[in-house]
Image 1 (cartoon, helix red, strand yellow):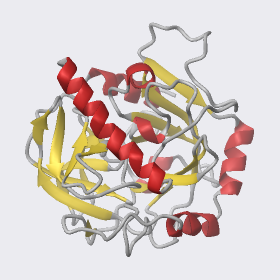
Image 2 (cartoon, rainbow, N blue to C red):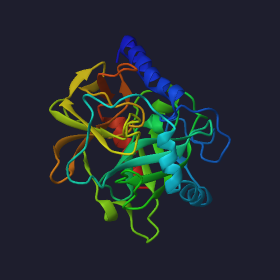
Image 3 (cartoon, rainbow, N blue to C red):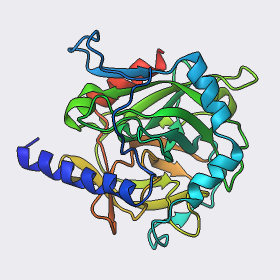
Image 4 (cartoon, rainbow, N blue to C red):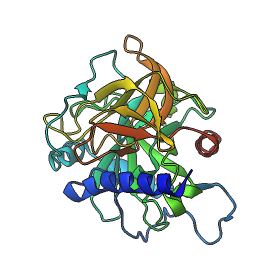
Length: 306
């Protein structure tokens, strides 16, 4: 990738992260002193994947922290303007695999992104954006108290809440803000069931050619939904500045949401080929996502074996 392209991508991501100044929906973080910090000096610098691990105590506290009332309140605290016109409420078969990823950023603010349960060996892997986990080019800026709520809708969590145990990102994101994708591993639910045994998992594809019709989904902090309802953009993916782009005006809160190719709204199934990563402006007309290549595959493999 050329230096010009890299600089442009960073400017685009800066605009997305700038949304966190208006609200707290994206992962704009400050230095953290908790235990969930990756990239420590003891880690092998050559390891292409950086992994944060949350202790059993932290995971119990996360589940206790994110009450239904708190989930509702964080949505009401942010208003990024009216929804649409490209983003529409999703009206197909209930998407059990897609949900809100709640967390506390390193500034101590409650916030959320969007994430997706995917097929995996351990039946516990979730894909989202790396900037939902930690700030790029800032190893100490990480997020805590992470809980995934699949199928979240208007204050309801029909399939329960799953505490995040580990969060893997490419090391290139940690140190150079490139490859904005993350794979999480979540605990079993309170009944001991693994995530995809409860909600299923979307297929995931790597090194897939850019193109075709894409459904991008997310819990955007726009009104009237204010993160309470899943929104969807549909468009044709095109390669642009080393990433892929579709026409879409989802905003903060939709970060990390899935790009589903071959999506069938009657079954709720598709193939995850990217996640919502960045916008073209604060009044967006395009959504950008990574082309899932070797860095994303390594992150996913680390998670599904975790």
